[in-house]
Amino acid sequence: MIRNGSFDTGEHVLVIGLGRSGMATCTVLRARGAVVYATDEKPPEALGETIAQLEREGVRFVAPAAIENIASELTACVLSPGVPLNGELVRHLQTLRVPVYSEIEVAYRISKAPMVAITGTKGKTTTTALVGKLFERAGKKTRVGGNIGNALINETFAAGADEWIIAEVSSFQLESIRSFKPRISAILNLSPDHLDRYHSMDEYGEAKFRIFANQGPGDTFVGNLDDPIVGELAEGEPSKRIPARTVWFGLAPRRMTTLYLRGDRITYAPPTGDPRPVEIMPVSEIPLQGRHNVSNVLAALLIGLAAGLDPEALRAGVRDFEPLPHRLQCVAIQDGVRYIDDSKSTNPGSVVAALETFTQPIVLIAGGKSKRTDFRAMGEAIRKRAKAVVLIGEAADEIAAAIDSKRLARANSMDEAVAIARVLAEPGDVVLLSPGCASFDMFASAEARGDAFAQAANALAAARG
Image (cartoon, rainbow, N blue to C red; front, top):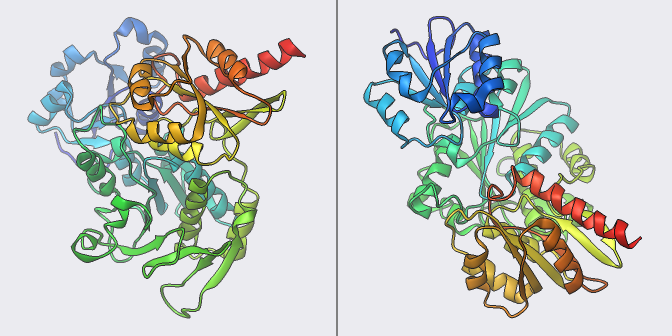
């Protein structure tokens, strides 16, 4: 077959993985005139309605075992984010010389609009949502998509050349890009995560670094100078890896920082033109809790400044931003105890950041499905900051070994965990759900886990009231 890489008429494309991104890819490519096949590791009987929807759209479902029957027709294969490159089916298609792309690669190729791409271990979703609001506040037509919850390909397919695409991208999505080239890219931070998929932190970091691999001198990379791994790219030989213009943010002024804190003011040092520092806004106007969110705001502001947005519009956009659900969200107050849902904390670094947010005594609920990460730093933070811990899920034993605390309890359900935490907490304390793990051992999603926590906390209040 002729392979033109345009993903339209004449292309025969196999989409692997039928989650949100996979289904959106099928719909968009069919709308562009491509012949589309779809497959998934789940048995056909578990995909009844999904297959019916695909058939209504003119997409043929092919079981993995039958892919060989259509392999000679394929001009491309598109992976959903959760599908690894080293899977048996993907490797087989590669031996047949079928080009393999990620969904964000296809989304980029069909897009007419410039793109901002944001990645990192923690803070991606909050920062991406904030950047979208800042661009809107500055008068830009804006679409937000990617790992934030809606498929990027839907947004790029609909976007015009006069719009901006703000994309949250994960390491999984970046693994199989080829020409993906955002106008502005940003890496917020890097800490151990997804080590059930990557052999080492180096491999994980290299996946993240692909975000700037195809950029050029007319593009911009935004980096966190405070992060030990990302900051290494700022100077010397590592800096040559970044082909774009680079700007840096940090919590303190340093030689390389373009945006930083000076006292309690966020301050901008323009990299070109008038070099005199410009005050953007006071930290007190940030509506998000935690020092880590100050870093997220710095990243979002610097992205906006790199795009040439008005500083006053950026300040107003930050000030009016509403915190996202399941990220240090207060869901109940009972007998002087605040219940905080941080269910989107799915790695140990996020737990450390959450614990550092509060000055009050903390009863922590943690645990879930481990991603083979090291819990030692999380355990140290728990020993310093939490008065007690309630553990749930498959990783309970691993976390318990890292904590070595006498004030430790275990629970078999979220209702039980909240009930135990309520007994351990006193007026003025915080009960914090910050799992540091994936949710899939007990819940369908991190959102479902957070909802269960909120329901349990409010049920306690209703029972007492």
